[in-house]
Image (cartoon, rainbow, N blue to C red; front, side, top):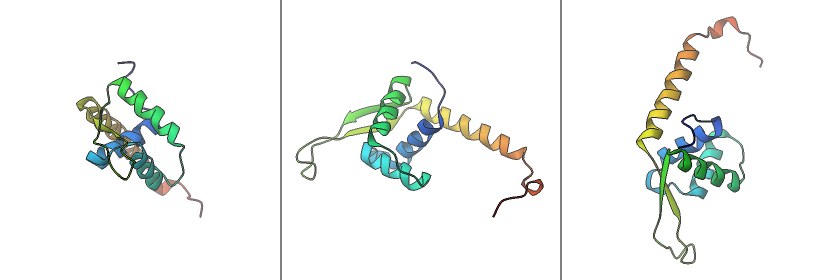
Length: 111
């Protein structure tokens, strides 16, 4: 394993993988991240992040069955590891802890 920390984009990708379950392959992950982040991403950036997360031990993958829709090509399906779940929980706890220190009433929000 190269590292145990998650970058912001890696966290988004990992959360998408967790939410998609057995449908977590590159294109569906890209669509999920784009939907929730409200911006577009290059598929190659998704692939790079997926393989980096796999190298770090946060994801495992296997080749799915070939489908007619894909002309007989198989999809690489990704699954989070236990280490990924622990890292996501830790990240969430840190963010929630930091949010508790912020008094939003003291900030003037721009309209």
